[in-house]
Image (cartoon, rainbow, N blue to C red):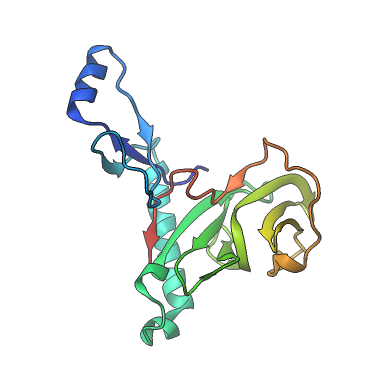
Length: 205
């Protein structure tokens, strides 16, 4: 599964020139804030997805919004979670080969983040919480190796990539105490929550 992509539409003049050549350009734009001023004005809209994909992403987003609102209801009611901390991104990746992708959720804002990174939640395909990872930096790398038929994960914590293995029920929540992965990760291994290097739809709960 791919993240919920966004596309930046080019200025009318560039679009017209491109259409005349028979090749309308497409640029994927990240929703992350950037200090770089684009060379032309852009307008961001949701990119058309393959049939069924867009509906699935919207359903997943709504499921996560409900789960997060329920999980953090007490602090939301007390207004302890600031506005920026109510944003999140997500990515679906099948970790156990059952063709039902698990859901990685990257939390944002000062409530969930510190100098070492942010909290990451992993939900099972049915929406139940699998693992609540403490502060880690993204992206998370999905290794080709498996433990208990689940992919091992590389989480960057305390200055090193940490090898995090499934224990039969969940992944260990604190990556900083897991063994360091001393090799260079294979370039073909999927990168999860690779934000802001990839375009993600920023959701809100």
